[in-house]
Length: 104
Image 1 (spheres, rainbow, N blue to C red):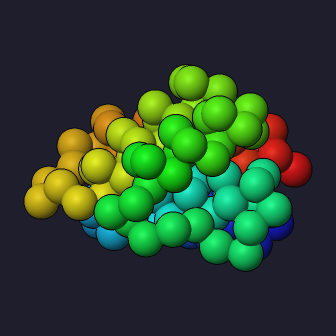
Image 2 (image 1 turned 180 degrees about the vertical axis):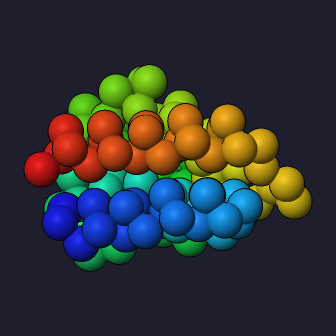
Image 3 (image 1 turned 120 degrees about the vertical axis):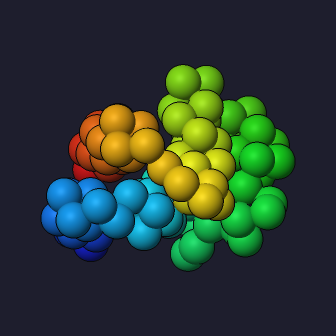
């Protein structure tokens, strides 16, 4: 979890520099890796498989709440967006921090 927290902390300067898309991609990677850790997996699935994986494995397995699953899906969607509003990327940063701290 420590490595993922460090990855998330690298996002704040990216957001301050106007690089919301890159920052959001890092957050999506950290959040899905966090879920994988909770499932005792080495890595999360490919981006296009995350929604079904979250439902089948993580949500039904009780390692994420419905709220966490929704936030992970939102951040993964934002990571693919051509433009990410600053307010949404900042909210995603806080969501990632909370999720990782809850896992530590």
